[in-house]
Length: 364
Image (cartoon, rainbow, N blue to C red; front, side, top):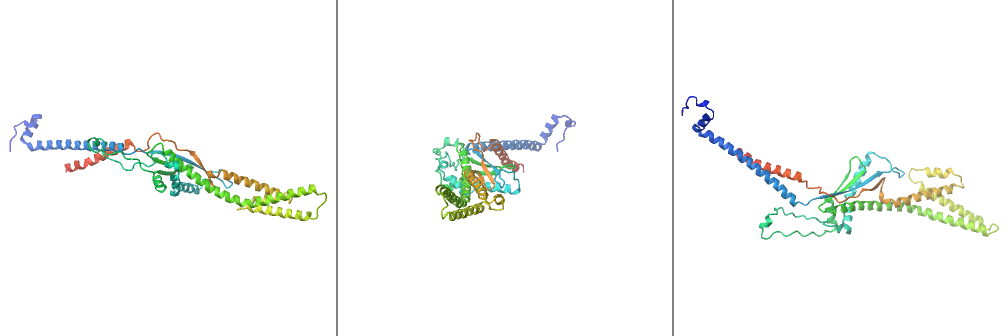
């Protein structure tokens, strides 16, 4: 063992140099640790850089997505058809049912069958993406040709595609339903969202129109009886002006008129007194016998006018709710995805995590 000179341990840097000279294995371990640390940092820097540039390549390749939203406003209605403030638990279920009806495949297939929808620009997006960096094409002998636009598929297939682009949601705490469509073509996405909303309203109109038309059909028999009664009463007035004395058949003619009156009254009561509402009966029989038919016909004419109004506004009603467009979708000004900052951050973190694997193996 080499003896150190006396006092050499107190000479600072000269003592350290002397120790490293007399113990070369200690110096080698320190140099190895320095080299290992530098190599680890270089690996982490390389991994993070690769992840960052990988994120840039992803952003340059993936199509930008644009989202447009059309909003439907739902208004609850009371039993008499007026706007009301219902807030019971069934309302949320009804709103969710409306949202599910908009997502139905058969409704979306009707949208996909419309020619104005099928003519939208860039309706079928590019599915295959060449993930190779663009600078590789400079060295390629046969660079990949641009992908031609895809043909618009049949309505059933297009409806499935629209379903994947579509999101229907009830806005929490409101009576609003948002119909959102996300698509790479910013000029087409609002037209597609509006087409889905209009098709749903058209469906409501058709269903409600059939209901009102069926209800109104039950009024046609009463209208026919009332028209015949008017003709008979007009004929009686004509006879009264033309005949100076009572004709032999006058009593029989009056009996026919009274019988027709009874038929009209019975028909009015049959169509007005449906359900649990007995107010029309009370109003009619509160009048005298001579005025009873007149009151009944007034109520009948008012109900008929109400039905005609329902038929005109059928497209805005769905059961006990009134539905209308609150705001149409507009062309989006900025893409909704991908998020550039999030993509680059995740790419960099992913590269760093991959670089930690060889760093950990080297440490062992």
